[in-house]
Image (cartoon, rainbow, N blue to C red; front, side):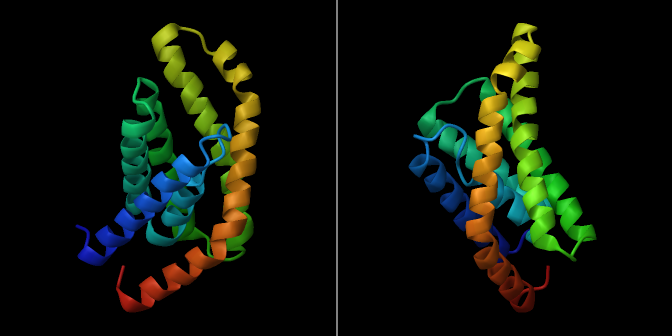
Length: 167
């Protein structure tokens, strides 16, 4: 299924995502995991991004706190990875602008998944969703910021990967 090089790449991106989540935990909903999942999906495909998102959340939550919200986080990151991967397969022109739009949308999609997870447990949706909108804005802003920082290095890595190894 995955070759050793791709598994190593996903493991290194997981380590980067997990450490980034620890480093930025003092800022609510601002962390590089979402941007890395989007970039991985766009450049390496939906399956790589889904694994990156699920593994990053699971391992970082082992240290930062595991709870019922972990299921919503994993589901959200898998969906974000699959969507960005499918878009990456179809769109190559104006990639940076498309990735910025995906980054903004992903911040709000993540919050929607959180509200849906809480709805399944508590029966309340609108209270969780509306109270979380400001944090979704922080998440979207952080995604754009991390996308601005990491797009060029990631694109370079993806081009090198494509030439060194067949996807």
